[in-house]
Length: 276
Image (cartoon, rainbow, N blue to C red):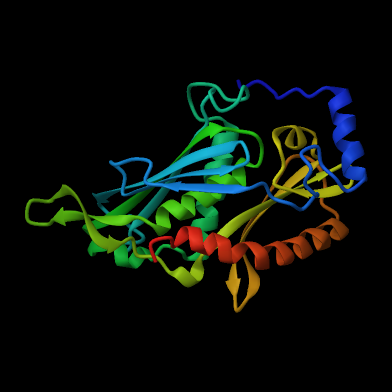
């Protein structure tokens, strides 16, 4: 069982005191994000790979593809699978072994945000209906967890997918050649959706939390949003932790989503489609 992150009462009080004055320990305001860093082509063996950092929180994401039989209920559609590896080197909360609750939840949130938005065109991943389709594997590895893994992993995932190239497939020999083609993974650029996560701490709604802030929050709400003629379009939502979200809190969060979306979406889109 993973160990629980422990924060002292003194540090908790300090965080709450700063938030009460509209500040945070690192100098940000409650709704401010940390600096985002993106580095492409981390792995030479992946169809696409990326390293993403929000402050000290860091993940690597990679895309691999294989030719498989389709699911019986979707004979003309490709398949998609997201996995998240949370290793002890990233946080004292993680342990080696079977995926824990946090790993499973994180992979499901990232997967749902991508799948429900329609970002991947699964029908274009069909090679031969009822027999062969492409399966897309999105693997995410946590390097360092300093809070808000949901947003960092989610962004890494869509950047990796948005820049992935299709492998060359020899249908006659029924095997991959080991070479990437110039053809991009079939995606709908207009369906791009990214994740924004908010926590409530001592009565304040906070974005892009640090590890300490995350440890003392009442609840977490992750919202995947895409573009609808310049306005935020919610494609998925996931609540975490035991606190109750009031209608007043929800109004505040949705307002923050609207405001942050207009500033962040152009930057996110540039990262995801860095190669055009």
